Length: 347
Image 1 (spheres, rainbow, N blue to C red):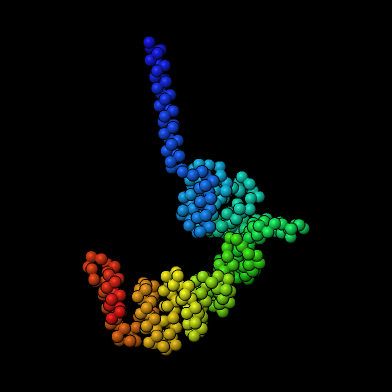
Image 2: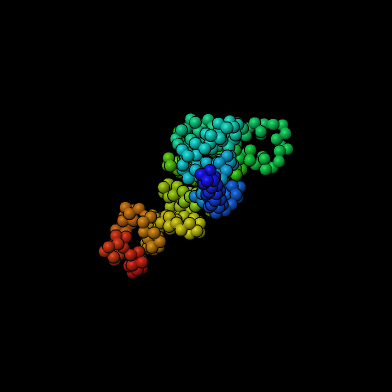
C-alpha cells in the first residue's frame, strides 16, 4: 500500500510538472505572438522609419526567442548607436568582432560606438578597417561586374568609413584632413547617411568656427540634395546673417519658411524679424516678432528681443502685458495661461 501511495505521489508530481510546463509555454506563446524572424522584420521596419524605441523593443523580443541571432543583435547595436547608447552598442559589436574579425558590420559598429564614447583612436582604427574592406572589393578586376546591390553596399561602407574619419578629423581641428575625408565620403552614394547630412556636417565644421564663407556653399549644396533639410536652410541663413548680409539672409530665411512649418519651427520667422530690424524695416520687424512670439515665446533670445522692443514704447507695454498674462492668470500654475497670454498679445 505504501509503495502504491509513493507511485501515486510521483504520478501526481509528474502531472503537475507537465501542466505547469504547458501553462508556461502557453503564457510564452501569448507574450510572443510572433516568431523571432517576424520580430526582426518588425524591428527592421521601425529602424528604417527612424522609430528606434519601437525597433529596440521588437529586436529584444526576437533575441529572447532566439538568443543566437547575429542579424538581430547587430541591428539592436545600431539602434543603440542612433540613440546615443555607445557602451551598449560597443558591447554588442565587440562580441561580433570576437566571433568574426572580418565582419565589416562589426568594423562599422565598433567605429561608431567608439566615436560616441570618445575613444577616437579606436574609432579611427575601425573606420579604416571598414574602408580597407571596401577597397579590397573595389580593387578587384571583376568589380565592375559585381551586381548593383553588392556594389551599392560596398561603396556605402567606403563612404561610411570616410565620413567617420572626417568627423574625427573635424573634432581634432584638422580641417584639411576632414575635408579630404568628406570629399571621399561623397564620392559614392551611401545607404547609411544621405549626402545632404554629410554636406551639413561638413558645413558645420566651418560654421562653428565662424568661417561662414566656407560653410555657406556646403549648406547650399546640402539644401539641393535634401529639400527638407531644415538644419541646412537655417544655418545657411544664419551664416549670411552673422556676416551682416541681412538682405541675403532675409531671402534665405524666407526660403526656409515652408520647410519650418512642417517641423513646427519658429526659427525662420525669428530670423526674418531680426533681418527686418537690421534693414530698418521696423514695422515688419515688430509684426514678424509678434507672430514668432505667438507661436513660441520661449524660443527667442530675451536680450535681443528686449533690445528691439525697448525702442518702441507701445511694444514695451505689449511685452509686459504678455509676461504678466502668461505668469499671473492662474496663481497656482506658474506656467500661467498661454491662451490668455496670446489674447493679450493680440491686443
